[in-house]
Image (cartoon, rainbow, N blue to C red):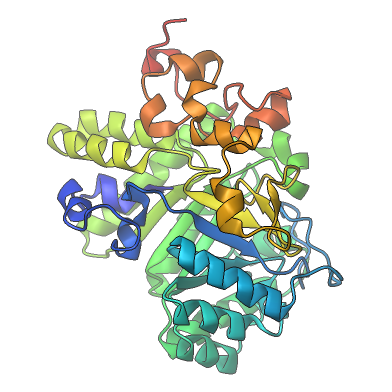
Length: 395
């Protein structure tokens, strides 16, 4: 996760994180990515059921519920363990998390345990009453997924009217006083919608937007050919940086992030060396604190059935099940081969990634993407768009 507004526009400094001691339990949410202990943010797919049919769904969500979802009692036991382990954020996802009737109860329980509870949703089920309930339980944030304006979004979401329903959900969150933001997954068919997404957050006064690079997992594994080329990725990131800066200079302070391609960090730094060398020095410090991809260390995932994964895209490999063993024990067990390697993955990265001068601030990018394309999870991430000159390749 690369905070474009934080880094390029200078809305935070290294001292902001340092004065909190860089411990996850002490950092405010906007600085969590710069923690030193890297207690995992946990994405919990509490259900596989969904009311939409998104073509790029990493969870292979479906219309019916599974019979092996964690019960409410099992879920609360899990939350107890996560809280004791020091998990700073619990992100409820799906499927569509709001189809699960006990979501408000579970989110409220997480808040009572002093965790930040957030929801990743398609937004279509957020009625005014639901928004009031989510506000009352102390939900920190609602991230609503849109893939463009109405025509493009509804085509991706597989249900006509999904766009308008999502906008209604956003308005209901705003009326209830809940912080709400957008989530947008970039690909060949919607990259042209990026300016429209920026226009939307201006018009609707939405404070935050996350632009996700495509990860080849779940139904998204069939979309490799629909990912951007390296040149198109650079152009998209430039557009995001330039638009964020323009809004900032106009006094329209939006939190803008790019997610799931850690080449964005070095690329942003290289741009700053040209545009603002003084700021570039501070950004390099922040990028080193961020440490790049943290799958299996600073981020983890739990499926509806209790299986534990390195991140939400890595469902083909489980470290264990929370029904059999607490998450805290599973996550800390470095005798598990993959878990042990992910904790020190820079030692196993191959090819141009191993020789890259930015390895310490990228950490080899996304292993799932490398595995999906090459069959080798330690191979270079094919979505890295930095040139050999930019990474100062020596092999």
